[in-house]
Image (cartoon, rainbow, N blue to C red; front, side, top):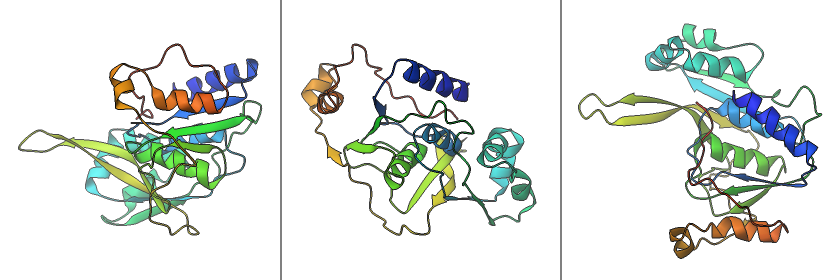
Length: 232
C-alpha cells in the first residue's frame, strides 16, 4: 500500500509539473527504515550507501515469526538476511549494506527543489530521512534542530507491554551508520524557522507558512493536524 501511494503521489507531482516539494517530518515518530529509503529513492540524486546492523535476540526472532521483521528484512536487499538472524547466536550483530534502494525506473524521480521540514520531535526512520537528504544533497533541511544524529540513525521499532504496568514500550532494532561520518551532534537546519505558539493555538501553521513564503508558494488551504509516521 505504501509503495503504491508513493508511486501515485510522484506520478501526480510529475503530471502537474510541480517544481517545489515540501516533505513535512515534524513530530514524526518514524517507522520502518525501508520505507524511509523508498521515499528517499524518489528524490535522491545518487545511490545510497549505508550499513544497517541488527542485533539478534530471542525477542527479535519472535517478532520475525510474526512476520513484521521478516518483511522488513526482505525489503532491505535483494537477498533477505532474515535467515541469518534466525541462525545467529543471541547478541550477534548482523550487518547488511543498503546500496540499492534507488528506483529501477527513474521516470517518476522528482527533479525539482525538495525541502525537508523537521523539528525536535522528528525521530527514528523520519530523522534518518533528514540525514539522508543532508548527506546526499537531496534537499534543503528547514525548521528546527532535530533528533537526527549525524553519525548514526536508529529505526525499525518493535513494541511490547511491560509485564506489571502494561505500559507500551517501543525499541529500535536497527542502527544505520556511515563510516565517513563520525559527528555525534544533531543536524542543524539550513533554513531556521521559528514556531509561534500563539499561531499554533489558533490552528495556524506559522512554520510551514514561513517556508512556503520563502519558496514563493501560496499558502496551503488544508493541513493535516496529525503527523503521519512511516508505515510499520
